Length: 323
Image (cartoon, rainbow, N blue to C red; front, top):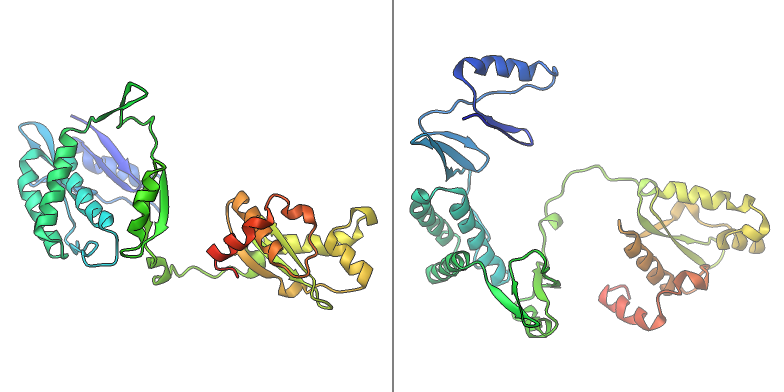
């Protein structure tokens, strides 16, 4: 029984014992900076990712594996998260036990799972009810529903779930459920506080002029006129284009160049502001239109915002806290 599986830089394979060293040397010979190490299996099997592989009666069986550094910490039951997230923790860990371990290990693994989640504040009754419902759901996973007198498998990939995401505020966000259900949507909660607001990645800060996919604002140094634009390229490239635009024929000048030449004003190129960053082109265009509408003395053409009716501006600005 020979096999080879790889996940990123973790590899598991079977080899004759007398071929292990030569295979390792072969792997390490491809590049001087790539060095593999080998771990041999023993009577306790061998660990690969989150599973332990064992041989029983000539067949491979699997068990759950956790590293010695595993802390056993999960989303605490008393944390400010919706109950669906907490129930999801139980279901996800239970699925690992049921789908990644042999049935002979289920009793021990489920017992360990319950003890671990008890230490994370989960009530025993809540654990039992969730585990029971999940096992029942898996047992009878083929559920059907009649749509237009046709029996449709609800587990089919042809039926896509639609979600409506709302920020989670305890005892408030749940009130959206009956409203959303009327439109055949599922509701998904988004926590207000995220780890990204606390834990920084430590990446170097990109200079303003080197940022791309941005909405930017240029101020006139001699009056209150402003210009809003967007670009997917680096901001320095777009600003350079603005500066060189005046060299074009008069009938092809941009609104910024016309303002400079007609009024003999100067634009504050060095203090160009980035008002938004957005990878998606369509979202970036919407953001650009919103910021154009917010200007008091805009240099932008009216056609720049023709796809965003004025009636939506107060609503959008209030939702985005832009006012």
